[in-house]
Image 1: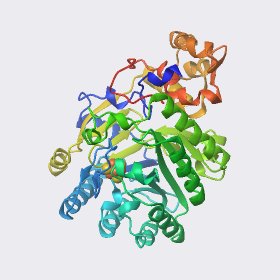
Image 2: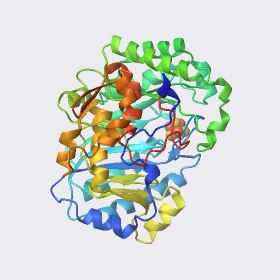
Image 3: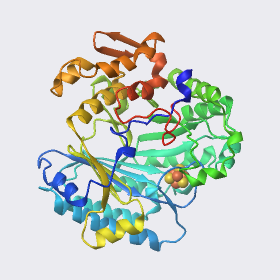
Length: 444
Ligand code: SF4
């Protein structure tokens, strides 16, 4: 497949975060917050950048932590940030979803998590309908904590599984036997947290197709409702930890593609529905229902089942998505803390959306979620003539010629077998995109 060599954004936002700049300042963010509707619910994203173990493939904003004090300090600052954010809003807003990500949010003790959840409930309207989702590292998760998470209102948990093969696990410094993952899943289900996601990976060092197929077989035994299957992106010039990985151990582009397709076929044969670029869900999972009801969304957290479109990010490096644009917090914990201690929202860059961005973002999100879009309806919706994106449509010509895309007038639909090329097709509508920029991961 020719598109395997291209490097394109993941389109968890449009424009991608690489377009953010320092021209968006704290006063801009305050003005955007003030103009939010007092009646519309929001989602919160809580970032905890600490982990107790490091994985060599990791490109996240995280810090290794061995002591409790940095975690206590971080939680105290996060509490202060919740106050600052709530004070900047036009009213006490309802929260439709709370996502805890990182890093490893369960690095924080139950007490610290309890305080933070109480603080959120104090400053926002939180109800039984609020989905509370946690990312979880099975290596460091004590099964007894499942009941605490349930008592905090946690209703969905994502486990970083990646690959069960011990050779691959050793190569990426992430040792977690199947039994450890099974123990966590059993404890979570026993505590009533039945919405379980697994993250799996292909393209890892020394990983083969048959290893990945056994990982899928073992995953089917545990039957999580939702699975994300990501390709490892080797970008050691950006993610220093990846220098621990020998590039010679990585599967080539063809092998990566074969791994991804074999894993997808095994999951589909196992009863999962293929969703978007890299997600799979059982038919009764909320993500499957969102597809049927046209509510699937693409956000910084991946695919979501119709969370509120406004997402307010808290914690170092977190990104807020507002109707006016994107705002990102200071990535470095010290700078983030200093801003909060001086009473400022810790925003240091972002992007203010233009009408053109909204149109292109709408088209790109439709391609990434529904795999089809009526360009004429989209241009009309945003007040442009129907031929406004014809130049972008022209750049789709090679995809049409290769049979990856079907076109009727200005309606395009990506064929099922061209699903791995979704990002590349979306890129045709991205006016910020530069082909082969090394700042983005391999497209497959
Ligand atoms: S992959 Fe997850 S658990 Fe591993 S170092 Fe990165 S954030 Fe931490």
